[in-house]
Amino acid sequence: MKFPNAHRGVKKIYIAQILSLVISVLFVISAILTLVSVKLESELGTLAVVAAVSTLVLALAEVIPMILEIVGLVQAKKDEPCFKNALVFMLIALGAQVLASAFSKITVVSRICEIVSEAAQLGALLFIIQGILLLAEPLKRTDVARLGQLEYRILTTAYITIVLVNVLSTVFFYLPDVLIIGSWLTIAAQVLRVVAYVIYLVFLAKSVKMLRE
Image (tube, rainbow, N blue to C red):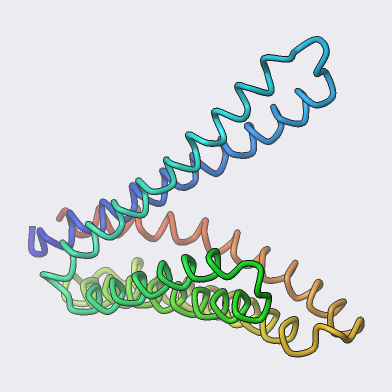
């Protein structure tokens, strides 16, 4: 194993992504339970309690993948400096998200924080990909490199679109036509993000196997 620290770190990042996916699916199930409990409140009154508790537990559980990913980056940066940059951007994104929540009632400030968070998240992801690409080069894994480059392009397109939507909705919030365009751009960006997320999971899985060699 040529890059043991990177292997352990990237593996944690991969596990964090899987956990995030599982939690997201469970959130959807919890939302469905909430809707059912509202419809059938007289018959299934306890269902609302179960749905509320599960939502709270899942909200707390979201912290676990976040911590795991940070630990993974701390480990991986010992073998490749790009992961250190990813760690810095991830911490900036988390800080911006906290500020966005704290100033949620102040629309402009909240929007600006969301834009910063989205940009920082993109930076973190791109540095993670770049770090893995640099590790793939000496290992002569062109298959991993090609997949990483594809992910790089899709992610960049998706996040630039999201940032553009946030800027348009913040600066030109009073123009209906701009809001309509923003809605379509949001849909396109979300589709790209889903595609990028699937490719990212495959890319991380291949990277973990590569670094284990």
